[in-house]
Image (cartoon, rainbow, N blue to C red; front, side, top):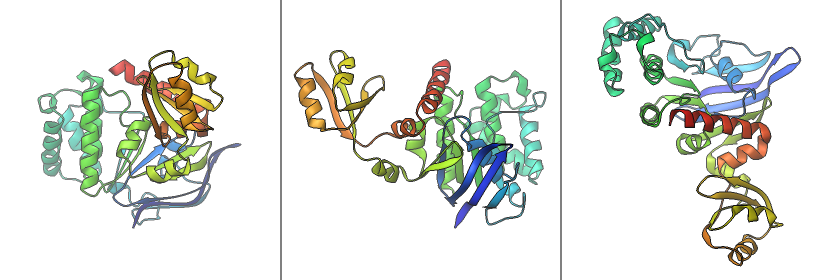
Length: 312
């Protein structure tokens, strides 16, 4: 069965078409990644799934329910714009959020203690939210989102701003929830995380669906025209080769898109410098993302990398 089904959904704001004739199926139990540049329609799509906003046309079915907000008590939502009641103490806040979903205080406290212990927050349970660090507050909001064991979990940029330790803790928690049967939809600019975690990946660009499938099927559709390599000398000489269409600096290696024979490139490089790595591969999701969205995608990836550097 499908946890979410959108059929020919369109949403406009004045003359701007935010989502255009979108059809999408999210299988129950899947981890489904939403990617796309800022302003591409990701958040609008998520908010329509949540019935926060309504489509101009088309139909949306969530957890077998087509009625507005009918399934919302079975959904957990972590918005990109984080927000907690800052004056409330952590344990009281979790109990309050659970009560909004119809969970008893005793059950909420029991489940809350389990999550607080898991995220090493037990010692902070009686502190006001405003006294917590940003990372702690983000973990508290995640706990509030999953406390009621939702059937569908929607996470909008869940890893943004987290340091590596908290990033890993959140990743493991999401994977565990998925193994227990929760359907997870999350939007991200972190292409490597989408590659590692998602069963299926959906990309929206300027309101249109441009990718939808498994990573293998997406990469297969874009062919094996990519070489990952590292040279001992100046990597700038790559751009001089006539078969090279694009060079992406990945730090420890370069990802090169070719229009010609990879062996000809290798022979040319060996004649001029030492070659430490040369691997013919399918394009990475990051490369496919940039191919489709061009400068807009590069801006999104650069922003994501800058945020990661700030918390590293």
